[in-house]
Image 1 (cartoon, helix red, strand yellow):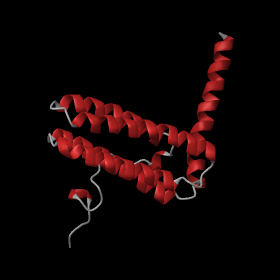
Image 2 (cartoon, helix red, strand yellow; image 1 turned 135 degrees about the vertical axis):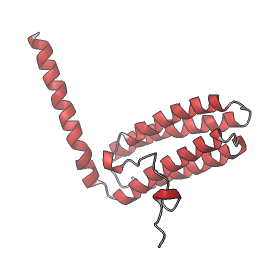
Image 3 (cartoon, one colour; image 1 turned 180 degrees about the vertical axis):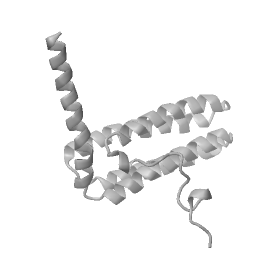
Image 4 (cartoon, helix red, strand yellow; image 1 turned 120 degrees about the horizontal axis):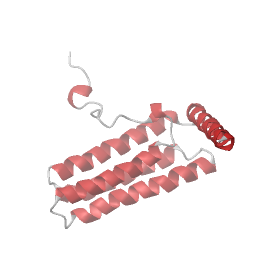
Length: 158
């Protein structure tokens, strides 16, 4: 019992240190605005994937994949001057996310069932969220907000 408590105390300490490391990393990022923009683009394109699938506009999905790869490249560019260990962790997860979206793109050429594509989209979002987990919470965009300049979340009219 005593040993279990020690192990739990050590794990709690590690979790606390890791929780503190997120904001420290944010303060140290060399291009925080570029990172935030790239993460926002990833979410926007992911939402576009979902919209195209929901509307059964499967022919448009490969274009969304191209945009997703451009957003991934923007994130790579935004972190290019970061420490190698951090870049490697981001790259590993980013490759998995891009591969998941590529699978949706590949499936869209023959798929006629939006439910199958939406199931793959859910997996892709999970992979994308794994990338986001490497960044502080305040860097992560809200996937429910419309892109700037669109809908009610955009600019106010005067």
